[in-house]
Image 1: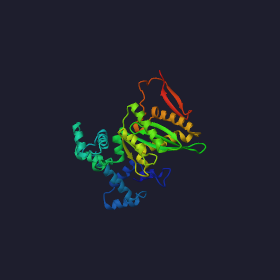
Image 2: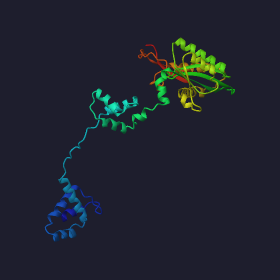
Image 3: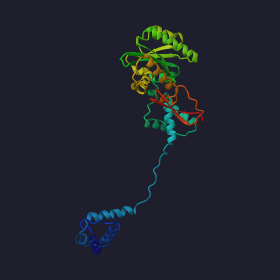
Image 4: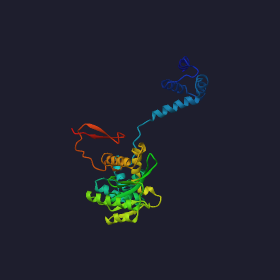
Length: 331
């Protein structure tokens, strides 16, 4: 044992020697070989183990005992974790069917051939932060618009200041379902007679396109007069007025105003109403026929013919190259 300790002290850093695992084993084994009597062990500790404390030797011994009794732990019992695809399906069903509760979703899964407990469905919905059906099924403006979106028109005004600080009013209509925009006209005096005439022209246009709608949304601006509403009532449409000072209730129209400002009007100086008319005509044509929309799964309001996907990619400039439009040229 003394020779073993001398080897340790002969290293380069004797002030704090590092003890390897084999050396720990040797010193521990030698110490317990000399433990014949209590007096002999105390003598060993006082005279021989001047490099280490007794607690250190005992700690090494506990490590040996611990290694002796190591064994492979059994896997914990319980049910196996549910398949991630099945969990995603349960979450999808809850999101697509707000009035479906745990039992209804469980019944649908049983019909599809899945074998799982009702409590599993409840735990999955709770883990994904999905509220109970009694709270998810409450009606809202979002639910209303989503259900009837193919039958709803919305309209609104926005203003543009020319280079000479002349204010122009622009009236437009937007189809909620397809996001298609109908540019109505520009005026400096948006009175009731002018707005009514634009409403008649839109109805004639929709009849030529064989498009029918049941609702039209607009705010409570005085420019939308009773005669304006009567034009749409004569076409079988119901007027939906938004509450006071709630532009979010007509969010689709407000979002289009934001798009045309960010992509077009904020980067152009408008000289007069004729210049603005040409700019809006070109942008609306691009918006309806070429610009993908996130709200309709990156499709365009007017569907594009996707049969030709083998031609080379070409680019055309919109509004003098301020916007780029990419398309497939003929092969």
